[in-house]
Amino acid sequence: MATLPTLRRALSFRALAALASLPAALLFTTMASASCPADALGTSRTLTMPRAAAAYGTAQHPPLPLQPGEVLLTFDDGPRAESTPLVLRALAQHCVLATFFMNGEPLLQQPALAKQVAAAGHTVGMHGFQHPHFGELPEAAQLADLSAMQAAWRQVFGGQPAAYRFPFLEETPALHAALKAQAITVMSVDAGADDWLPDQTPAMLTERLLAQLRPKGSGIILLHDAQDQTARALPTMLAALKAHGYRVVHLRWADAP
Image (cartoon, rainbow, N blue to C red; front, side, top):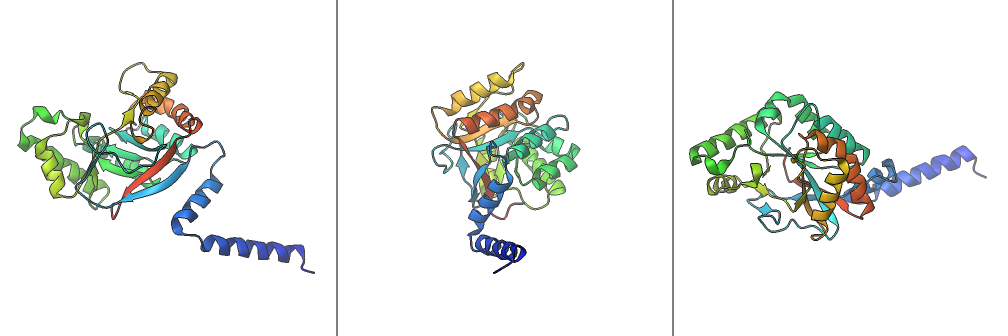
């Protein structure tokens, strides 16, 4: 008869062998689920998109290819030392991966924090160097802002960014053409919490997010990691998404840093 230690070794070997036989995506999901609290929202799957001159988000473009109940969490305007770490902590506690659209100026001011976002597994995109109203600027100034944004990206992350969200969602023909020529995807939104409005409580932000998501059933969520009130409300919002049956998808682009 096998001894108890021998049986334990055999069972451990079989468990490892079974894990090794799983597809990579399923293995990631299995291991992540095992390490997350039962009440965590979690990340249900990773959607890898090709580098392309595409555009998504039903506020302005076709929808991202999501299933009913799937949402993509995105954050704009960071990194910001006072609030981004709190956002990262809430996402980590819920085992959620998100996409951060960073501005060039704070990116250069907080390079270590920006790298911390990427090191935690989140996807990073561009959001304009100075967050201007592009429609009020001449084309040359718009293109100069894009060049400065890309230079800041290369200085901090290296490589080439794959995604861009327009500040204020104010898209212009000149920048669309420049992004298209470089096969950079434009990301708009489907739902948000209007978390830039002042004096919002966690309950108010959560209810507004759910109200905007309800008629759509899925989509790209817009929040702001540069807002203190958003950082404070995020644990409540993530718990509410879990309670209402939403599932988080992590978006990545092929060959992007």
